[in-house]
Length: 463
Image (cartoon, rainbow, N blue to C red; front, side, top):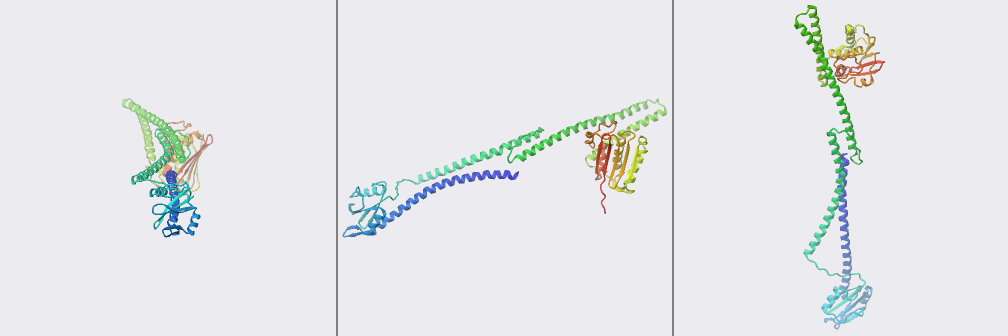
């Protein structure tokens, strides 16, 4: 793009220069042609003047009487010329080939007139020469020489040069203006369109426009792509904003519920009219609700730390087979899941990885409890531990395609989630924990076929 703009700018400059050079060259050629024509005519004139000047060698003077020898007559004939010989008084004493209308006597002013102007006919040029006391006139017919009488002064020459220079300057400026206007129009029109597009983007007006051809075509194509992407991001932002508001509403509701319980039972305890059994029961309920609130606050804190990648991991070498087996056992020992059907398998007895046991336990338990919590009570869950992966699969209800796309998003709850007491952060937190360990998580599911969670662990570097 940069080089195309540079090339277009250089092309316009070169166009101006080339046109100006061509124009000036044309003017110069015209002047030179005019000058060469004059020089050519002047060269012919100089040749004929030399002929007249040298012709005195063919004139012989005997006893004061001039005559032209035979060779001179031949030269006159070759030149298609004639000659008149004059004495000191301007009287013609001898003539050869002269026209009948030629005068027989010339006064000094007549000689000037004959020399300066064509007094005989339009095709004859007359030259004046002398030898000793004899003057002679030689007329050459058909020489093509034309004499002009010019009068000029230094100021007139300067005026002519000034006018000629002014003409060139005006012509050059006119050419530069026309080419510059054409280039400026082609340059500023798309630039104005670009400025308008950027203003629309600034005002969040994400609309695509027609892509013009030419050097700016890639720019407008990229702007259309940016506009489309910004529109998609804006829609996504609004969707996340709605989800966040919904999540805040849910969390507020979840916080209010235990708070209301705590407040109600605290008021009952404050009355002092309860039996010891009731007092113990109410205290246990208050403690349970307090722990639930603590879990909510912990999830909020943890998700913010994970979002900003500020989770400190305390890594230790752990046998993953034993680690996952203990999680399964702890789950089955929980009264809620004591009847669950969980099958545990491992390809080896010892598979070691460096993990943070606390956070990894939470991540795995989240996926395991989701498989038990959001499926029928008779669901079968299988856990397989391999060298670099942990797979948790079930044969339950599965996850709808529209929910599966957002399964790892914060604040999202699927449509098949019957219980809403959670924070909506569990799956996102579990995924972030796995990624903090350098691993990845993928979930595949089909409705009424079951769900599979694949946790890929980072390979251990060999020392």
